Image (cartoon, rainbow, N blue to C red; front, side, top):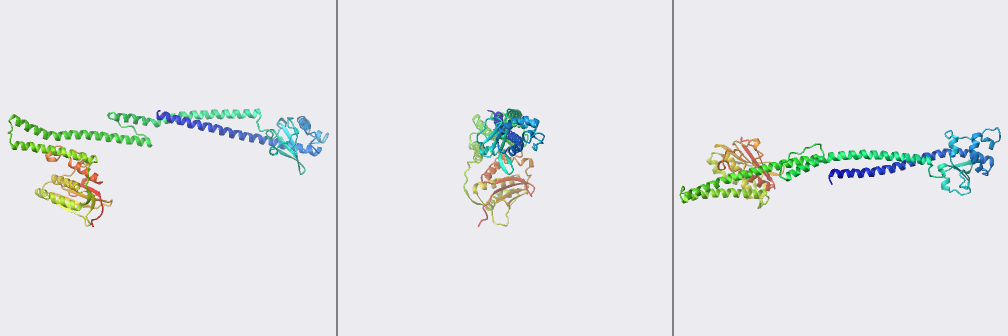
Length: 478
């Protein structure tokens, strides 16, 4: 199932549960409040009856005849109450709650219990002579004569908790209104949920199509990034990934083309010499065979270099780790290249710090290889009479650094990010014999990376290039 429909189903389930819960809770709350309202109205009526019945008990001294009194009360109230109690021409001292109309007062069922809880009057004629439980009598209004409680009067809902037909109809109407309102709100929520689910999942659909295009090998245009949420972060990461894939694909094609070019030269020379020997153009002597051997050696070195770079990049390089004094490594490298520098009239020097020599953990031969490559390049590209300096650098991040600086032409800023790529040469017009194959720096960078260090290129104070390698520092030599 698509994510859009799964989200919609979740919205539907959440809305259904919420709607049912809301309907039940609101229905119960409404019924409870309505019952309280009805009970409060009956309570006011009971208070009016309590006044009337208290005067009746005071006049008659007991509850005899109270059933007949209540039955005739509607007719008596429309004429006069005083005739039954005080005789002709007297005025009633009965005080009826002004909020209670005569019509509402006589419409409800009335039950009177004496002081013992025995029902002595019931306008419905169903409970006469029965004992009413104390917990029911507690809902009624006491009938007080003097300082004594002569009985209790209950009206309407005080007697029976069930609602009347009119009340029940009102509650059903309210329930229907609540149900329709809840259904309408749920429908609106579902429509909005589907809309927002579509908006949320639309970028994911674009990502899925782009991912399928990449998986099939087709170029993928960047997906649209909108907003600042997790989906936008995913889209941005996907665009970065596809951009890197395109770059790696272009680099792979370039490596294949460069490797083919580098291999073609010695192979062509070897084939030409061999064909010339077959055709009799070249003599079949040791000198001609020596030329073939030299080209074969060059081809073998190129293949070995490529193989070495592949081993290093794949992480399969085996390192013989030991504590390496970087100052001593720099001294060895400078001593090794001193004759080559002197032959070009180049000043080659080592500038060490005043502190103890930096120590790192690494493969001494591989670290020497990195320094040899950097110093050899510096001497190669520095003009006669120039300067090359190997300098120790102080760093506060726990790394020991060495910089190889020269007074040569330097590395243009736009080329610095690519000088460590295999087969990359700044001067494309140079041949591999004069400008190198573009593999030395690539190998050096991978060796440094395998040691947990970093290598960077920048400007030299001498005016040329400055290559800096840094390795995790173990501490001073004791």
